[in-house]
Length: 324
Image (tube, rainbow, N blue to C red):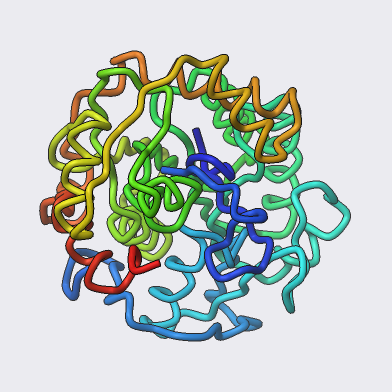
């Protein structure tokens, strides 16, 4: 799962959360967190035109905007690409990619709608060829942990990018799905409905993902690396709901459903039948237990432990995420 409207998509529709009509569900600091890691305090975008410019695709999405903020705080020239922004970038229209990549040293790639969908591998191959032709030196690709179909897209990018250094960041389920994605409404309503059964997931905080991405974009030693990013411990969705409830000061419970039932619920909220079936199948596959184990890749890159889910919940509550 990369960063789709229901899990880890970096949708750049231009709203405050980078979501598509509020239908989101998706999957990654601290000062001195590691080579190239920013403080996360930067605001705005320095639209880069000079040497060292970094293109951030889906720059208004959940991960993209965090990467933009950190690069800007470091003084790195940034070109934030989005469908409606100052730098046009649309994954469905390759004709504008060369203009966005021209003069760029590195690029953060968050593909929409998902690296596992049909056509993603072809898009990644096209992007890789254009990036090399434009003289891009380094690409950091956001991918999903434990997604065989996403790996095909990863390899398509590597195979087409030639001399471009490619780093892949595979993410666990985003903690921010509960306060910036489609699961927000469930927390506010007291019931998180999802097809995860009793499987535990090592939820990853997006601040950690963004710090790792920035470290790979701005520092050496990451070429060819594949980082699997997780939080420090795995929780079932029921356990996560309990922690969210304690932080929010209101009861929150997890309601497990089957994949077909979840697909039907998505359709009731306006998701097309094929997309609803795809998403439900994807979640059931990803949450079958094979992604439960944690990794130490955040610590390897940043030199510190990843943020715990309870810390995320307290911070989100303190910022008013669940006051609605």
